[in-house]
Image (cartoon, rainbow, N blue to C red):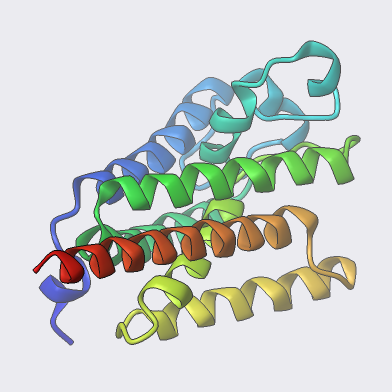
Length: 201
């Protein structure tokens, strides 16, 4: 496997990867534990995670910041590496604007859904954004060698959700749906632009 082709130089994808790692490092320093120890979920709101209190406090910035905070080290690492692989290929094929639109819209939609459905729990993690990126790969890059990996990530996430709560978590589901919708809009827009360019020739 050609690692250079799998992970092309993609500034926006690398930035997302670094932000997730930075969020984890800041959490470890703030709580005073090792880099591989788990964070206490109930304390993550101190750093920006979201809860049902969001509807009263209107601290909407938490919907963004919470995407870079995690409870478990392995979960964080899985999300960060998966995002790096998928986001790098999306950025190379479709540009950084498409990548960030998918990540931010899908991730934020997923966070909102998670807070709405589970107001008593702490909402954090990049899984919602990862699901949006996977949807983006399936729609925008169906023939890419990385699309199979995106499908595998979705399958793993669904399996973990069903094992944990016997259903797909709302944040993951709505993040994926948002990613599908954004991807379809992008695909239609780019198809129309191509048609206009061909008509002008």
